[in-house]
Image 1 (cartoon, one colour):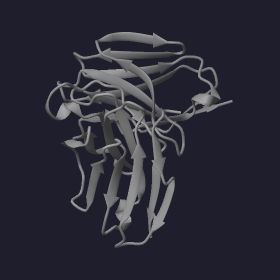
Image 2 (cartoon, helix red, strand yellow):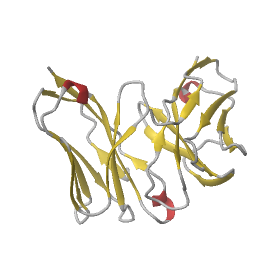
Image 3 (cartoon, one colour):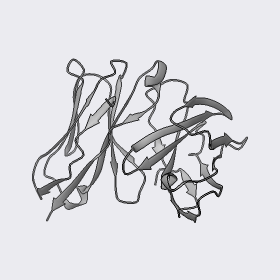
Length: 113
Length: 115
């Protein structure tokens, strides 16, 4: 079983829809949670970074962390065609093997105009 | 633009050959991380260097090696290449790298195709 599980999709939504992307994890040592966006043939770029359980909002993006359930989510409101990309969840901790960034497999999102 | 540069962008080579990928971290960053991204394995951590010293190893094959030079640029050497080594190779950098939680900034990647 992988430490981080992410639904690979692909996910296709109409412009303006609310998108929900999710990851589950098994390692309790993970403390820092990130979402990266990767456009085709480009490097991943950091989208959201959260530490504690709860919600963090940045414009149209909201990251949610539930440490008790080992579940994180990314919500995209009013989705745009420019949001079409692969979204990778990633997490890390402060001790042992958890110190290295572990990625989910990525969810490919297409927003249709 | 993350500030991390990688060369070359594309590399086509044959099985059994050896290649070197190069990465320059963001100005001031001391740590460099190497990752392999393939369709079936996703983004896998290979190795980390911090200020010239190996800091952590992930799923790196014995045929692969890396080093970080005094000017902090890093090279990933891949030898005895196999078809399965075809992948995107990314490097990332952070300011520190001795504890978890730092934001990693990724370069644009090198696309390796082994024929």
